[in-house]
Image (cartoon, rainbow, N blue to C red):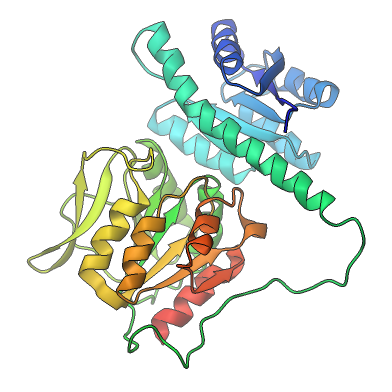
Length: 361
């Protein structure tokens, strides 16, 4: 697709508007169509300029970022909004609220360093966001063009393995591991609250996120859920009925310790450009749990998780994939389906009930 992604920059700081505009101009296939100093002006410009993407600051006079998001939600706008967040605990908490209000994604304002280092940090964060927005636009237009004539509606295909032909003699599931990225906070806010307090296994999650934000997400999910949700800590023993989220900026694996299975956080290099990475976690699970594990691969860009799921499948683990229709970005689950490692593909609302069903078998 030759048409450029049209971006509107909304920030009350002239310096930051300029920095974001300059950084975006360095990304191929992007055109900055305008800027605004607060949300009220931004809303008017969204109607006038029809951008594909808006970068939106939180703290602004007249109308702040959250107020702007609420107005866009009322108007049922389909523009993708990327929040520009302060890299603080307070900023992370507000970011979670913004994602729940419909923000597409977020980037963290660089802290410290030279002007050029900060620009490079912004560029590194914005590139994948632009790529995912581009991919989403291509897919949506392709799907519209692919249905020129009305056809009888078919139910979404849900692939479930035949119980008559298990990969290995069935064993009960002892752990659920999840890999998720773009669109993850909203998807987890649907899935995790559907898990019952009586769930008899731990759930361990890798969500691609920077430091600080994973704790804010865990705290937000904990308030909504019957199960306890927390950011994982070094050396803690994982327990049934609890959900553990890998800390941003660290790799997380599970290891056997006296008394049970424990969390091991490392500073090992990124994998698939990610730290934490789903593959890193899944490899450790394949060694420890054999065919007693259940993998879940959900919305996100790229292919992180596929190699780890292959290892888990070789040992007889089962895998649930999120379907295309309910993914913000159908990347990670699509790659898992293409690799042949998913046993069941389900819409978001059915993933938690299927986890419960499989665990109770």
